[in-house]
Image 1 (spheres, one colour):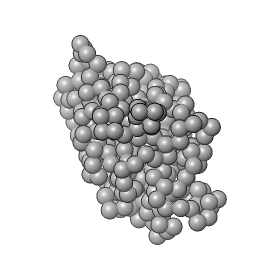
Image 2: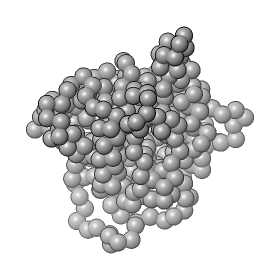
Image 3: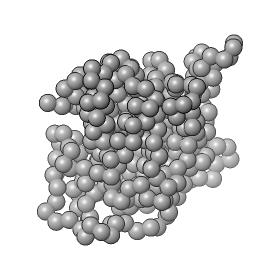
Image 4: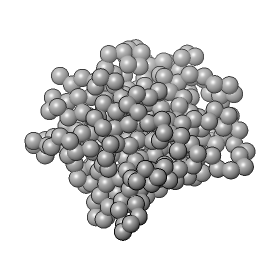
Length: 328
C-alpha cells in the first residue's frame, strides 16, 4: 500500500533540498527547491493571473532540458527578483548551464500576491534578491511548514495560508512529493467548519484527522468573496522517476487536480495558479504508460494533502488580516 516518505515532505525524493527565507516585518518570503545535480522540469499554468520567470524554457521543444533550482516567492512581480539572488549564489558555486567559459544557472520562478496582508511594504530596495540568497543558504532535507518561506504572508478566502508539503511512496518504489505556497482566492475548508476539502486523501492525522463534515454548502456558488482580486497558489511536484520534459509537463498538469480537490474555487481569473514538476531521474519507469498514469494521480493526491497541511500548520502573527486554522 502507498505510504508517506520518512519526513512526509517533498525532500523524501532523494537528492532534493528545500530552503525558506522570511521577512516578518514585510510579512513575506521565498522558498527554493534544488537538487544535488540539475534536474528535468516542466510547468503548467491554469490560473488567470500568473507571474513567472523562465517558464518558456521548460517547454519540450526548448534547448535547455534541465534546471538548477526552482523558486516560489511572495511579493508579486517584485518577488521574481528572488530567482536572481538564487542564480547569483549558484553561479558563485560554479553551478549552471555551461556556455563557453561561463556558467548560467537556470532558475525558473513563480510568484504570489501578498502585498496587502498587513506587513510593511514601503521598502527602499527590493528585498527579494536577498531573500533568495538566504533561502538557498538554508536549503536542507528538513524544513518548516506554515507561515514560512513563500507562505509567510499568504492568505485564503477565510484563513491565513502558508507553505505545505507531503509525500507518498508508490508500490512501484517511486516517491512523489509536493511543495505548495497556498495563497488562494478560494477556501481550503468546508464552509465555516474546520474540515478540509482534502479530507478524503488524508494519511493518518497529518492535518487533524477530522474527516468530512456532515453538511456541505450549496455547491454551485463559490463560498468566497471577490475582495482583493489578487491571489495565487504556486507549487512543485517532484519524483525520483526518470521523466522527459514532456512527461514532467504532464505530471504538473495532473497535479492541478490536487488544487481542485483542496481549494474551492480554484484556477479562477484572479489566481495565477501554477505548478512546476521536477524529476531527478534516479529510478527508470518499468512500464512508461501505466507508471506515468500512477505518478500523475499520486501528484494530484499529494498536492491536495500538502495544501491542507499548509493551512493546518499556519500560526498567527501580529496584524494578520485573517485568523489561522487553529483559531477555530
